[in-house]
Length: 238
Image (cartoon, rainbow, N blue to C red; front, top):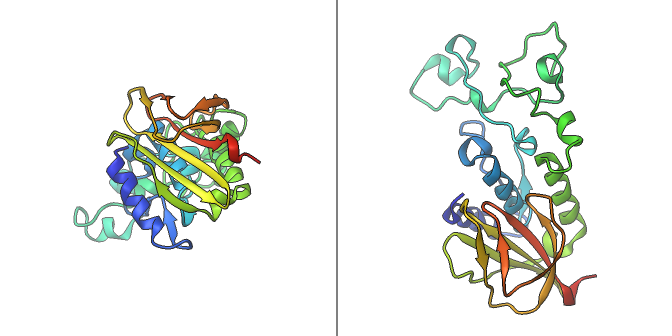
């Protein structure tokens, strides 16, 4: 994910504390995973849930569902049927929610034909499977929602950008009273070391990889490719 995209999302969300801030998945464009890939989609959803505004997520993005090719004979989108090729086809992003690994992914009875065909990986990419995986997209979303809900800096706080020294790194503070949370995103797929002007130490609360919670120094922060992190300042931790 490029940081210009992050900036576009930021602009939309920062206009008002109560503005609706959607992850740009609509019924007529690609799903987040299909546009960005799974690793960058995780970072994009961290961005969605740490910026100002009211986050809105399209059904299926929380488990990393992707677009599904739809044969012409199975098309449901009226625009595709009436004027094929004139408007963007919405069907690939409108396939049924994948609840489990059963036939039809639990979206309907086995004897019922789904609204649209399911992808071949629905037995692996579904809610039931990801609930049991501590590193899944669904687990990440649950962790981010819980943190946002219980952290005034994230759900009600102000926003301040931080100079990261590189166009491919996106860094900002959220603050409410004395509580501050720092979000750091490494947009490219290469590892990078972020050296922030802010001094002091903090506690890394969440990584998009869901594999570390540790004390860190803000002057030298090592990030893996496509990794995003939320950090609580040590001197403001509750």
